[in-house]
Image (tube, rainbow over the protein chains, first blue to last red):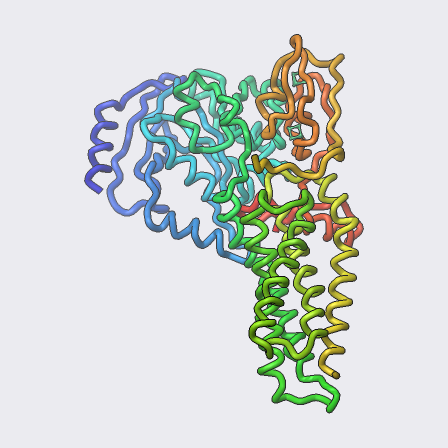
Length: 380
Length: 99
Ligand code: SF4
Ligand code: SF4
C-alpha cells in the first residue's frame, strides 16, 4: 500500500512528457477503489484516458489464476482489450502486445519490474497467447485492426511492436508491416524473460526462444486436464457400481458396496495413472507415443497391485477378476495419457494422428476384453 | 538426457531454400530450434522436433516454408473423427491448448 503511493509520487514528478502528437501525458492519482482493482490510475492524453496497471499481483489475482486452473467448465477470465500502461511510459516507450486472457496479462505485468511500457491487449476471446495464435484470434487481422482502433500512431513516435514469440503461429509479421508500418519484434517465449530481453537490446538468446515442458510446466496443467475427464470417471464408476450387483443369483443390491467399491477404487487408480503419474513422469517413461507411456504405467501399477493382493488375499474375487483389471486399467490410463498430448508443447498433429490410429483401437479392445472378463468373474 | 522427443519422421514441414532470403525470421519464431543458418540460407536441422505450429510458414516473407499446421491434440482429433471434420481445438484457458 505505502510502497504503491510512493511509486505514484515518483511518477508524478516525472509527468508531463510529450506524445507523438505533442500533447501532455499526465498521471491522475487513483482515489477510490478503481474497477478492476489492478488498475492504479490513468494516463491522460488529450481526451484519452489510458489505464495504468499494477506490476504486483494481489490476492484476488492469484485467486483468479487458481480458479482458472481448476475450472472444469469453460470459465472465461478475460479483460477488456485495448491499450494499457505500466510504469510511466512516453512516446518512445516500447509497446508490448498481449492476449486478453487475464492470466497471460497478469503474468506479463508482474514481470515488468522497472519497465515503462505500453501494453496493447488484443481481443483473443479470453484465451491465452499460444492457443489463440493457433486458432488465429491472436492474429494478423486483429492486430492490424487494434493498432488502428487504438490510434497508436498518435501516441507513440516509433513504429515497433514487441509480440510474445508464441503468438507467431497467428501473426504474419511482414503483413502487419505492410498494412500498418509497424515492425514486429518477437520477444521471448516466457514473460519471465521479458525484462532481460528489453535490457539486452531486444534480443532473445536461444534459451529464451525454446519452449520447455519440464516437471513444473506439466504439473500446472494436470488439474485442468483432470477436471475435464473427471466426468467420465464418475460415469464409468457408476456403470461399474450398477454392474457389480449382477451375479449368478440374479441382482443383489447388497453386493454393490463391497464389489462396487473395489471397482471404483481401481478405476480411480487408473485415472491417476493416466492423468497424473504419466504426465508428471513423462520423460522417464519409455516410448514416444503418449498412449504407450500411459499403457506402460497402467500395467506397472497393476503389477504392483497384483503383488500386493497376493500378500493380502481377498482384494479380488478371483484371478479372473484380477486379470480383468490388467486390461481395464491400462486401457483407461492409455486413453487419459493420450489426451495429455493436447496440453503438451511438443506434439505435432501428424504425430498424434499416427499414434491414435494404433492406440484408439487397442484401447477399445483392451476395455472390451477387460469388462467382459470382469462381468464373467462375477458369475463364477 | 531425458529430452522429450515425439514420434519421428511424420512432420509435414518443408523448406524451399531457393526462395530463402536469409532473413532469419524462421529462427526467431520456431519454439523448437528446428532451423539454423548455413551460408546465409535457412536449413532444417531438427526435423523431428517440429510440432507443426505453423509459426515459421506464417512469418516467412518469401513463402519458402510450408507446413500443415495444426494442434497435436488427441481429443481434437477424436472429435474430428466423430464429426468427420478437421481437428479443431476447443481451447480453454491455460492448456496449450485443448480441452
Ligand atoms: S523466414 Fe523464410 S526467407 Fe527468412 S530465413 Fe527463414 S526460410 Fe529464409
Ligand atoms: S512449424 Fe513450428 S515447430 Fe515446426 S519448424 Fe515451424 S516454427 Fe518450428
